[in-house]
Each structure stands twice: as structure tokens, then as C-alpha cells.
Image (cartoon, rainbow, N blue to C red):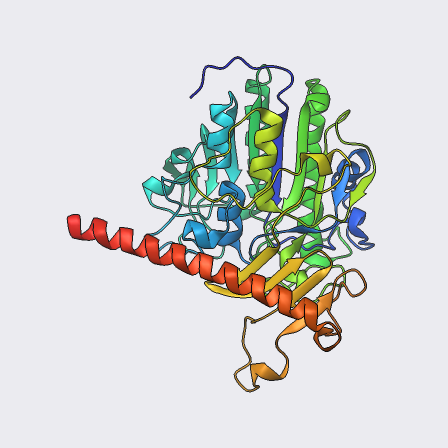
Length: 423
């Protein structure tokens, strides 16, 4: 770890990622049923990115992209892992917490990891000084709570997880208030099965799901209060988001599709951020950004270094956070496993494939589909027949990117086969 002395120019960073929270589940995103005043206050005091995307519509690949700034297909984690899988985040990847630790930060994660559950995959092997939480989703078994690299209990009271993660995050902040810190608070909820403390049970007009979301809001408020009490609010960048769209419950805000789908409802996620004095209060942006943009963005803000020896798909969007323009970037590509499903470029979104496929209908009847997200964010009307030039252009970009990813995959498989032979 670097001995670089901290400076006040380096913001403390708190990143809160909820599991399966919908684009439309927050009051600041237009929800009139669920009460989320503390998260809404982050939006009021900062910026709402209304076109923030997860890199995938499911957990593991979304989180792999967040941690590395790279498409999960480049990382080799294109699908959801389960406790029986032997794969996980490679030691070769340079992660967001590693970058920040090298820049002089103390780093901690509390919550759901879901990037591998063998020792070599643990969060503490990938840049986090401290960790506590579940290594995978709460619907996978066994449900075991880790502290560092050891199981602390196999008798997990899931109703207490949201409060417990928050308690640990607050404790870490209090212990490291004198130097830059990075807290990644990856809440287990509102992933199913839903659990909530008795204090919040039955309080929400949105049923059990609403109870869970309102509990999350309360505990995020406790963390915000801690920053205020310690005099750290003005020196801390706080970001609140989700890993993908909602599953069985939750609101997409009128967007089509849910978790698992590469329609907007499965991949567009709520994102609010505040940093007093650096992010203008009440700002909004419709620039198309992605969670993997956070690595280069935070590198720019914290004085970190982005690797030059590999493709980094994220771009520095610190200007967007400050209320400025979006830098030039490649289009955004959305996969299901290794299959490219969709591409977004500017106002246009082209669907080339789909999961789940309906085996009773010919895919050729409806695909490809071209949508104008400015006029039709719900992806209702296919415009490919009226815009053949756009269709041709985006199809060409998609073909080139598919070839790029396929070539990288073949090279990685060849290297793995060579190591196995040598072994």
C-alpha cells in the first residue's frame, strides 16, 4: 500500500449499491408510494444521473464491471456465480479499491460481494482492507456471514443485515475520519428473499418490498448523519445506486423489462450523488453513463492511476458529475452471457438478440429492433424501417465489438490451456 500522505483534495468516497432496486423505486425518481427522503436528499443536494446503466442485467457481471471498469466479458465473469463455482475475480484484474488504496485510501466493503467465494477471490484479496458480509446472494445456500476471510456465523438473521452493514460502515468511518477512506456498502436487499426489521414491517404502502426499501433509506440516513456529525460531509462524495433492475417486485419507472432483460428496465439504474461545493445541488443529467465509468472517474478525483496495459471501457465522467458535458465515448454494449443483445449510441438503442428467447416464435419476426430513447424511453415502437442508415451503422459497430470480445476470449482460453499443460 502506498505511504502517500493524504490531502484534503482527495474526497472521502462512499458508494452504496443496493441489490435489485428498481429505477423507479425512489421518490426522487418519481415514486409516490415508497418513502425515501434520505436518498432523495442526496439528489436534492447533488446530481441525478437519469441515464445510468449497469453493465449487465444480473448481479455478478454487473459487479465485475463496477470493480474493474471493464465489460464483464473481458473479465471472464459473464454470468451469475453460485457457491459451487470455482471461478471468480482474477488476481490479474486491477480493481477500484486497489486503485484507491494505491492512492492513499483506507478501503472497506460491507455487504454482498458475488465475485467468487474461494479464498483467492475474497474482497480482502482484491483491495479491501476490511470486509464483512455475504459472499453471494441471499437466496443461495449456505447463507454464511464473513468477517475478513473467516465465517463469523452460519446462523444469519437476514432481517438484521441492513442495520449491521451500516453499523460496520459507520464504525469504519469513525476510525478513519482523519485520512481519505473508501466505503463500498453493498446492501443485500431488496434481493429476494425479502427480510426487514420489525421496526419497519408493515409500515410501507408498498408492502414487504416497500418496507425493505424504506428501511434501506433509513439506514443510509444514519450514514449521512455520521458524516455530518464528524464534519466530513463537505469532504465526502456519496453515491447511491443499484446493480441492475428489479426482479419480482419494484418499479422500473415505466421502462420496459426487468432484471435479466437488456431492455431499459433491466439495465438502467437509479444513481444520485452529492459532494457539496463540487457537485451542484439539484442537478440532473441525461448523459448515457455506466457503472464501469466509476473507476476512471474516481481515479481522476482521487489522484489514482488507470491501468494502461488492458482495455478499460469506462471513461472519466467527473465533468458530468460537476454539471458539465459528457466526454466522447464508444457506444454502450449489453450482453447476456457471451451474446451481444443490445447497443446504445446517443439517442439510439438497437436490440439484436434477447434473453429469454421465446422458442415458440421466430426471433426474425421482431429482431432487430431500433428505438429512439429520447422520444420513446419505454422502447415501444421499432423504428428500424424508417432509419436504415442508423440500423446499418449500429449493426456494424456491434459486429466489430463482438469480434473484439470473441478474440479476447479465444486468447484467454489459449493462455488458460497453456497454463494447464505446463502444470
